[in-house]
Length: 160
Image (cartoon, rainbow, N blue to C red; front, side):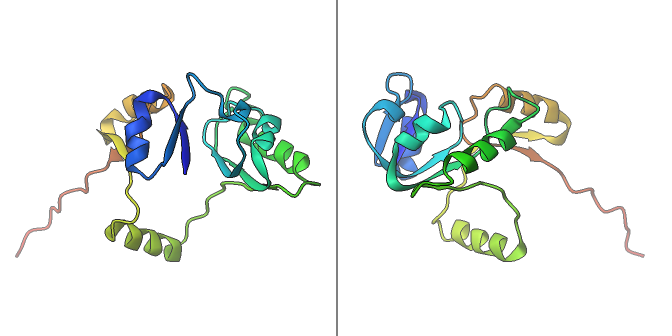
Protein backbone atom coordinates (compact mmCIF):
# COMPACT_ATOMS: atom_id res chain seq x y z
CA UNK A 1 0.00 0.00 0.00
CA UNK A 2 1.24 3.46 -0.90
CA UNK A 3 0.33 6.43 1.29
CA UNK A 4 0.60 10.09 0.37
CA UNK A 5 1.30 12.53 3.20
CA UNK A 6 3.78 15.04 4.48
CA UNK A 7 7.01 13.82 6.03
CA UNK A 8 5.51 14.62 9.44
CA UNK A 9 3.00 11.73 9.10
CA UNK A 10 5.22 9.17 7.37
CA UNK A 11 6.03 7.07 10.44
CA UNK A 12 2.40 7.04 11.58
CA UNK A 13 1.27 5.76 8.18
CA UNK A 14 4.03 3.15 8.08
CA UNK A 15 2.87 1.92 11.50
CA UNK A 16 -0.62 1.52 10.01
CA UNK A 17 0.67 -0.64 7.15
CA UNK A 18 1.96 1.62 4.37
CA UNK A 19 4.74 -0.04 2.38
CA UNK A 20 5.68 3.11 0.51
CA UNK A 21 5.40 6.80 1.31
CA UNK A 22 5.10 9.69 -1.12
CA UNK A 23 5.77 13.11 0.38
CA UNK A 24 3.25 15.43 -1.27
CA UNK A 25 5.42 18.46 -0.45
CA UNK A 26 8.03 17.22 -2.94
CA UNK A 27 6.21 14.81 -5.28
CA UNK A 28 2.85 14.90 -7.03
CA UNK A 29 1.78 11.25 -7.12
CA UNK A 30 -0.61 11.94 -10.01
CA UNK A 31 2.33 13.06 -12.17
CA UNK A 32 4.82 10.32 -11.18
CA UNK A 33 3.84 7.89 -13.95
CA UNK A 34 2.62 5.13 -11.62
CA UNK A 35 -0.83 3.59 -11.80
CA UNK A 36 -2.85 2.47 -8.80
CA UNK A 37 -5.66 -0.06 -8.51
CA UNK A 38 -7.39 1.97 -5.81
CA UNK A 39 -7.19 5.60 -4.72
CA UNK A 40 -8.95 6.84 -1.59
CA UNK A 41 -8.85 10.61 -1.93
CA UNK A 42 -9.25 12.19 1.52
CA UNK A 43 -8.12 15.68 0.51
CA UNK A 44 -9.50 16.42 -2.98
CA UNK A 45 -6.61 18.67 -3.93
CA UNK A 46 -6.20 17.04 -7.37
CA UNK A 47 -8.63 17.23 -10.25
CA UNK A 48 -10.66 14.12 -11.00
CA UNK A 49 -8.97 13.96 -14.42
CA UNK A 50 -5.50 13.83 -12.85
CA UNK A 51 -6.63 11.20 -10.35
CA UNK A 52 -8.15 9.16 -13.16
CA UNK A 53 -4.84 9.25 -15.09
CA UNK A 54 -3.11 7.84 -11.97
CA UNK A 55 -5.50 4.85 -11.88
CA UNK A 56 -4.88 1.52 -13.57
CA UNK A 57 -7.21 0.73 -16.48
CA UNK A 58 -9.60 -1.08 -14.10
CA UNK A 59 -8.82 0.97 -10.99
CA UNK A 60 -11.26 2.54 -8.57
CA UNK A 61 -11.36 6.10 -7.24
CA UNK A 62 -13.25 6.86 -4.03
CA UNK A 63 -13.37 10.54 -3.05
CA UNK A 64 -13.83 11.13 0.66
CA UNK A 65 -14.46 14.76 1.50
CA UNK A 66 -12.60 17.92 0.77
CA UNK A 67 -13.39 20.81 -1.57
CA UNK A 68 -15.59 22.58 0.93
CA UNK A 69 -14.28 25.89 -0.37
CA UNK A 70 -17.06 25.58 -2.97
CA UNK A 71 -19.76 25.51 -0.30
CA UNK A 72 -22.85 25.35 -2.47
CA UNK A 73 -21.56 22.15 -4.08
CA UNK A 74 -19.27 20.84 -1.34
CA UNK A 75 -18.42 17.20 -2.04
CA UNK A 76 -21.73 16.55 -3.78
CA UNK A 77 -20.68 18.42 -6.90
CA UNK A 78 -17.46 16.46 -7.08
CA UNK A 79 -19.35 13.19 -6.81
CA UNK A 80 -21.71 14.15 -9.65
CA UNK A 81 -18.75 15.26 -11.76
CA UNK A 82 -16.98 11.96 -11.05
CA UNK A 83 -20.02 9.89 -11.95
CA UNK A 84 -20.17 11.65 -15.33
CA UNK A 85 -16.41 11.46 -15.97
CA UNK A 86 -16.23 7.72 -15.20
CA UNK A 87 -19.52 6.75 -16.85
CA UNK A 88 -18.06 5.26 -20.03
CA UNK A 89 -14.80 4.00 -18.56
CA UNK A 90 -13.50 0.63 -17.39
CA UNK A 91 -12.36 2.51 -14.29
CA UNK A 92 -14.75 2.72 -11.37
CA UNK A 93 -15.90 5.66 -9.30
CA UNK A 94 -17.19 4.92 -5.83
CA UNK A 95 -18.53 7.05 -3.07
CA UNK A 96 -17.84 7.12 0.61
CA UNK A 97 -21.34 7.64 1.89
CA UNK A 98 -21.73 6.04 5.25
CA UNK A 99 -24.87 4.54 6.67
CA UNK A 100 -23.79 2.58 9.75
CA UNK A 101 -25.90 -0.25 11.00
CA UNK A 102 -25.66 -2.49 14.05
CA UNK A 103 -24.23 -5.49 12.18
CA UNK A 104 -21.43 -3.41 10.60
CA UNK A 105 -20.60 -1.77 13.92
CA UNK A 106 -20.41 -5.21 15.59
CA UNK A 107 -17.92 -6.40 12.96
CA UNK A 108 -15.87 -3.21 13.40
CA UNK A 109 -15.88 -3.72 17.18
CA UNK A 110 -14.57 -7.28 16.72
CA UNK A 111 -11.81 -6.10 14.38
CA UNK A 112 -10.72 -3.42 16.86
CA UNK A 113 -10.78 -5.86 19.79
CA UNK A 114 -8.73 -8.38 17.76
CA UNK A 115 -6.14 -5.69 17.00
CA UNK A 116 -6.80 -5.86 13.24
CA UNK A 117 -8.02 -2.25 13.10
CA UNK A 118 -6.33 0.43 15.13
CA UNK A 119 -8.13 3.75 15.42
CA UNK A 120 -5.80 6.73 15.51
CA UNK A 121 -6.90 9.40 17.97
CA UNK A 122 -5.09 12.71 17.54
CA UNK A 123 -6.69 14.63 20.42
CA UNK A 124 -9.56 14.31 22.85
CA UNK A 125 -11.52 17.28 24.16
CA UNK A 126 -14.18 17.49 26.88
CA UNK A 127 -17.69 18.42 25.72
CA UNK A 128 -17.34 22.02 26.93
CA UNK A 129 -14.35 22.49 24.57
CA UNK A 130 -16.18 21.38 21.43
CA UNK A 131 -15.54 24.72 19.71
CA UNK A 132 -11.80 24.32 20.37
CA UNK A 133 -11.93 20.78 18.94
CA UNK A 134 -13.69 22.01 15.81
CA UNK A 135 -11.04 24.69 15.43
CA UNK A 136 -8.31 22.04 15.65
CA UNK A 137 -9.98 19.96 12.94
CA UNK A 138 -10.58 23.06 10.81
CA UNK A 139 -6.87 23.86 10.77
CA UNK A 140 -6.40 20.72 8.66
CA UNK A 141 -3.48 19.26 10.58
CA UNK A 142 -5.11 16.60 12.75
CA UNK A 143 -3.16 13.34 12.71
CA UNK A 144 -6.10 11.00 13.15
CA UNK A 145 -9.50 11.55 14.67
CA UNK A 146 -10.39 14.30 17.09
CA UNK A 147 -12.84 13.08 19.71
CA UNK A 148 -15.23 14.71 22.17
CA UNK A 149 -15.68 13.10 25.59
CA UNK A 150 -19.22 13.13 26.88
CA UNK A 151 -19.36 12.19 30.56
CA UNK A 152 -22.38 10.23 31.70
CA UNK A 153 -24.39 12.00 34.40
CA UNK A 154 -23.95 10.66 37.89
CA UNK A 155 -26.90 8.82 39.31
CA UNK A 156 -28.75 10.78 41.98
CA UNK A 157 -30.78 7.80 43.16
CA UNK A 158 -30.22 6.77 46.76
CA UNK A 159 -30.78 3.42 48.37
CA UNK A 160 -33.77 3.52 50.56
